[in-house]
Length: 151
Image 1 (cartoon, rainbow, N blue to C red):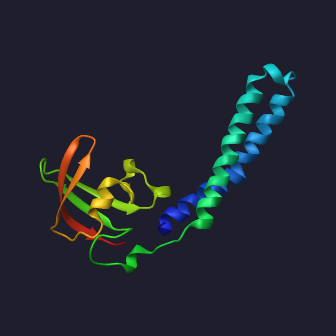
Image 2 (image 1 turned 135 degrees about the vertical axis):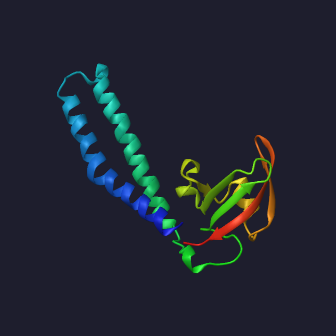
Image 3 (image 1 turned 30 degrees about the vertical axis):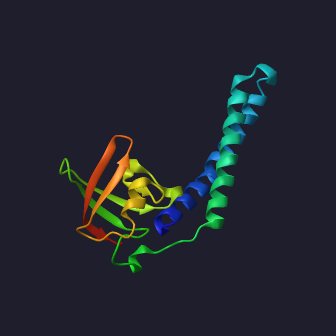
């Protein structure tokens, strides 16, 4: 896990414990005051949210306890975990930049590519100027590695 990924999970955990958990406890208490719990939709919704929050807290705590924080700024050379890679699609000439990160911090919408994804697996070990062929749901795609950075 990268340092930024670890920090983001830690911040989410603190928010869940300090804000979300107390808020849902208050919501449950308010819903209880409305009487019959068997037909109280507010109570059931609050309990469901509490269950989700507690599950997410346990999940994040487990991830953080097993996490090995890696500082990619100490790396150089071929593509490895933590690399920020600029690629060009050889068919469309479209450039894309991705950072290869761990599963817990992956977010393709923000160009954070899961190390276990087909594209990341194909990129590992490649150098600038190398071409890589990747099988995607849309078919075979070819990319050229333009730039590799470790920040």
